[in-house]
Length: 158
Image 1 (cartoon, rainbow, N blue to C red):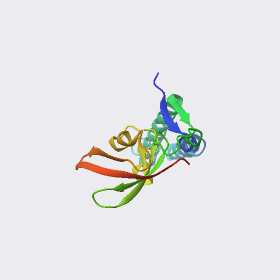
Image 2 (image 1 turned 180 degrees about the horizontal axis):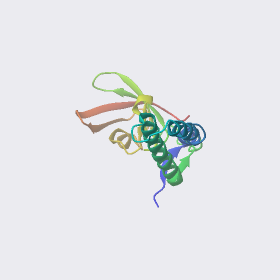
Image 3 (image 1 turned 120 degrees about the horizontal axis):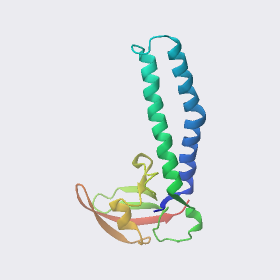
Image 4 (image 1 turned 30 degrees about the horizontal axis):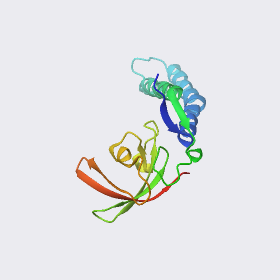
């Protein structure tokens, strides 16, 4: 079985979501189904069908999270001690060498990647191009809209 890397914070976030789904959402949906059943004819009962659909989505997400967490290998990025070298879990400040804009990303596991939170998957093209580089290095990678050139301004582990 392949172990999937995940940060300690990412693991805690996914476990909190799983706990919320099991202890809050699941009982709420069961109560909604019971209430809808009490209204009578289930064939034309929109509340019942909506609650069952919500139950299906919730149970699917619970199964997905349990499977993901069972194969995850939690890596405490603070203990890696990689210094200024970019490895899994690093928070990297980059400068776009073409536009001069700066951006900061954290390299995380595929399970916890969220571009809105500036968390990129270790398997993404930009992360693969950064791995092994150090502060002050430049690198390039193939983005969907062409080759991008970045310089590494800073590397930290949180």
